[in-house]
Image (cartoon, rainbow, N blue to C red; front, side):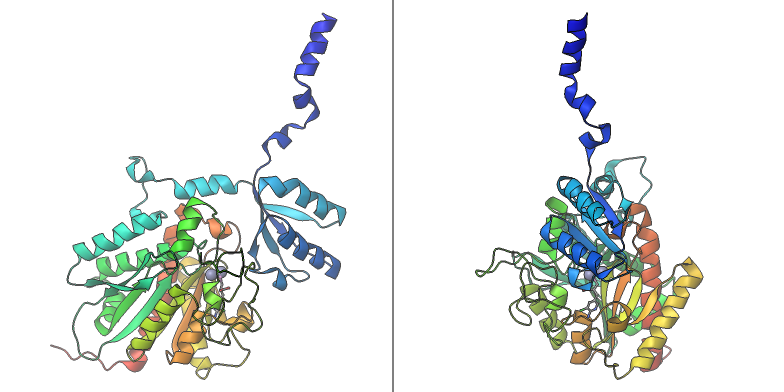
Length: 429
Ligand code: 9B3
Ligand code: ZN
Ligand code: ZN
């Protein structure tokens, strides 16, 4: 009997010694607020030395006292990181205890699930599905939708722009929207799809979108960074940059929103290829950046409004991000985003911050909105969509419709203002 007991204990020694939860340590997202400069330095170290992904701020450089840091910590570095925090008396909260479940939820293809009530536009889609969608959208709307190949990515994936055009009025102006510069910001491509669907469905029945489309064509680039986006579906959900390689380093990727020619690679970007905000070897060094810049240069006389869609943190930003100087039409731009944020609050009860990028989010050079502005597109914006940190980049599919509807309201509000300011009234037939 005693022997049996000893045998049993030995057999289960591992289970008896290990607390139950250790056996199932998971990836987590932690929220940490450093209180002293020492804690700031330790956090900067943790986020660079260990296998973690910084969600907020975008680079360790911006970590500062009394400001929340959101850190994705994979299971295998969880204990080391938590020990380190504990040893330095840095407290943390678990922001997300189950990011893997959320990732699973986002990539599940429930289109064949008859119980699923969500539509195509209320789910996230793989790059392959988005290419198929682009094709189908053109085929189903041959009079309104054209697909334009503007270039290709580092890994030679096509960069397709959809042109929505409802009539051939002469001297028609245009609006540009790009999505998915940053690979992990999945709500962004979802918004571009949402916008196209909304425009095609509600032209003629919604007076605002009708007014907008009657007065301007819309160019939409649903996935500016297809290589990165593909990589977030197959390999690393937290990837931000593109996937370009360079002889001089083993680190992969350039931050495409630091690669445009606007105070390129000054404070707020990095010349270190291993950082998340690497500016690239020179302005427009990346094929994705160059394709967009070339297209906009050749259409700059017709493009009046530029929108770039990002997440997360709920902000409506305008130039400049690359300097603290005010844009020439600052007050006009401020008025527009203020009204857009007001509309979002009124209809969706959600708070969006607004203002020039440098004061509202951070000083950062090389962004597409600043570059487009300097090119002469005087109404240039970057939107940071939902949420404010609850799910961060892992916004559940059930939030897609709210996130997109409020961003759509902001786009419509601003576009209508521009139409009002600059377009001659439509002459009645
Ligand atoms: C950054 C820049 Cl450089 C810009 N011109 N406008 C907006 C941002 C913020 C986004 C970024 O690239 O870091 C937020 Se994800
Ligand atoms: Zn972004
Ligand atoms: Zn962002």
